[in-house]
Length: 120
Image 1 (cartoon, one colour):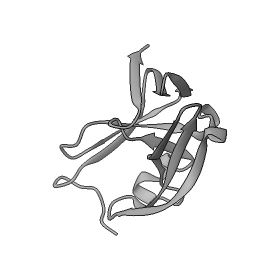
Image 2 (image 1 turned 30 degrees about the horizontal axis):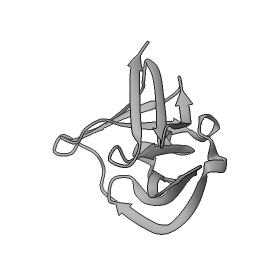
Image 3 (image 1 turned 45 degrees about the horizontal axis):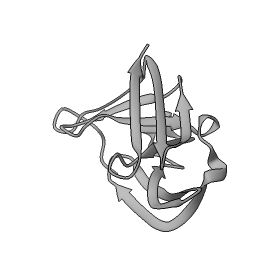
Image 4 (image 1 turned 120 degrees about the vertical axis):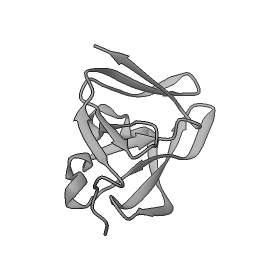
């Protein structure tokens, strides 16, 4: 486990606005309670509470990835009429303490789904 710091900063804050996620033209998530996670030089990632995600459209896949700063991530396949997007989302179900705020949230791969963040 590594801790965020000056050489690898991680900041999590509530996003002031609405984040929506669509796949194949179908909205699979919409939240006014998203968290914006900024990590080092990477693009901002939006984590949406599971309560704001159509979880019936997701199935956990066999893929698991590891981040030394956040922990192990479970991946999910999104299924909507006419499309199944493998590993379209991920979730740190037991994140390390420094990023505990993202527990119970899903994030989405922008290359596989459309993510729209509209400031409020």
